[in-house]
Figure 1: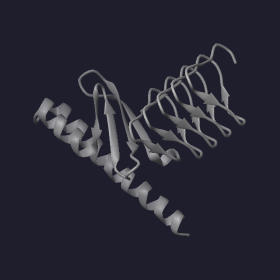
Figure 2 (figure 1 turned 90 degrees about the horizontal axis):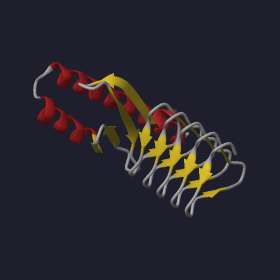
Figure 3 (figure 1 turned 120 degrees about the vertical axis):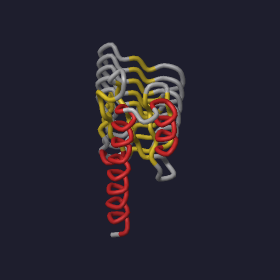
Length: 168
């Protein structure tokens, strides 16, 4: 409802809601109790289900999956092989780098960590390599590398907590 749009072969069903200026398109699926609203976009082969919320200016696309009680919001970009099952599966930081961009970190389906920053998309290791190549030994490089180290710790911790819950 509202000015929301659902197009292409996208499906919205069960108790799912799409509203505001949100867009769902392509082969995307939104179902369960999921909510997509604000200026959010869900497209491609993306899946949003369970009690997940995608809102503000967030995008979920490609083969990404957002499920469980996950909340994807702000300017977050979740895509590729991302798998966000809860709030511990993604994080974003705003105001870093030479143009104060938003950098999104997310768990990949293989358990690794993906990064989206500007036009860069890749793994955490590839992100570090690109930072060194682009910024050398500058203060900006140091800031980004510190952020990468923090995210590596965070995802290692949240991954271990998730394994412990699954083993119980």
